[in-house]
Length: 394
View 1 (cartoon, one colour):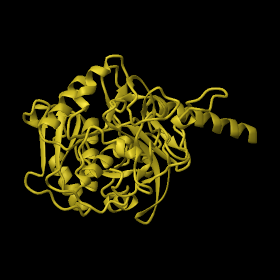
View 2 (cartoon, rainbow, N blue to C red):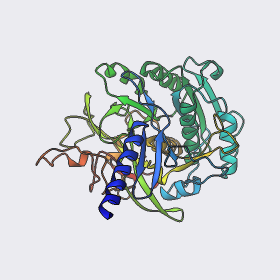
View 3 (cartoon, rainbow, N blue to C red):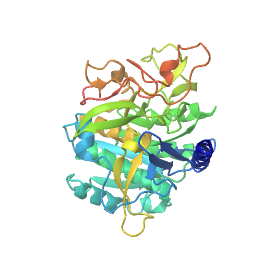
View 4 (cartoon, rainbow, N blue to C red):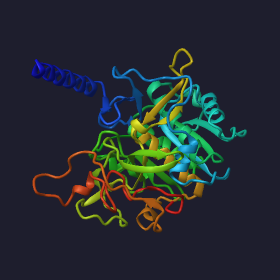
C-alpha cells in the first residue's frame, strides 16, 4: 500500500513537471515557488522577453493589492548602491511594443515604494522611428516586461532620465532599430531584457549594439545553459542571474539561479578582455544580479489585470539587466567597452558567486569547461565576474 502511494505521488509529480514545461512554467523545489514566462519562446530571427512571473501551482499569476517581492530598499541595500544618479544621464529601455499605462503605472510604483516622483520630462517614450509611442501596438506580456524594466531602473537610478523606445515587433531587425534610436536620442545606457537563439546572420546586427559613449546591457536568458543574442554581442554587458537571500536589507548570500543563461557564442569573436580557456569565442556572461522568481522583485502593472490586483512578483534576467543598467546610470558611465572594467575590477567591488548551476555544459571526463554553467571561485558563465558591491566595478 505504501509503495502504491509512493508510485502515485511520483506519477503526479511527473505529470506536474510535464504540464509546467509545456506551459513554459517551472517549480523551485526548495522554495515551492512556481513561475512562468510572460512571453512565448520566439522563432529564429525574433526575440522573447526574459521575464518570469510568480504563479500558483496551476500557473495562474499571483496578483495582489500591494507589493510582496523585493523592493528598492532591499535591492539597493543588497548591492551597496547609495547614489541616485543625475538628470544629465539618460537610461533607455528597449522592448517590443508598448504598455499604454506605462507612465501612470511607473508613477504609482515610485510613489508606493518611496521613490521620488518623476519630474516633468524625466520619463519619455517614443517609437523606433522617433515618433509617438501611440503608434506602437500593445502586448500584455511585453507590457509587463516594459514595466519591470522601467521600475528596476527607477530603483537603482531614481534621478536619471528614463527613455522608453518601443520596437514595432519582436523581430531582431526592429529591436536593433529601436536600440539605434535610443542611442541617437541621447541615451548613456541602454538596457535590453530580451533574447533569442543565436543565428548565422546575427553578426549583421551587432553594430546596432555598439555606440560610442553608450553602455548597453542585455539579459543572458532564462532557459539555463545555452547562448543567446544579443547577450552574445561583444560590445554589450551580458547580465546573468542569481538566487538572492537577504538579512533585512542586506545581502546574506547568492547562488547561481538555475534558469540563468550562459554559454559560448557560435558566431561572435572573443573580446580582447576575455581570457577564459574553454570557449574559443565570446563567453556569456559578464556580471549578474538577482533573477530567480523565488527571490523575485515587486512590479506594478495595471494593463491586462483585473480587480485592482496590480502587484506581481517577477524574476528572470529581465530583472538583472535593468538593475545593472541602472547602476551604470548612477555612475554616468557610458562606453561600448564597459564590460572591460568588470574583468579588472577593484578588490571587493563584486561579490563572487561560487555555487549553483544552470545546466550541463561538460561531457564525460571533460571538466575543463565546468565553469561555463557552474558557480566557481572567480569567473563563471552564469554570473560572470560576480554581483555588485557598490559602483566601483561600473
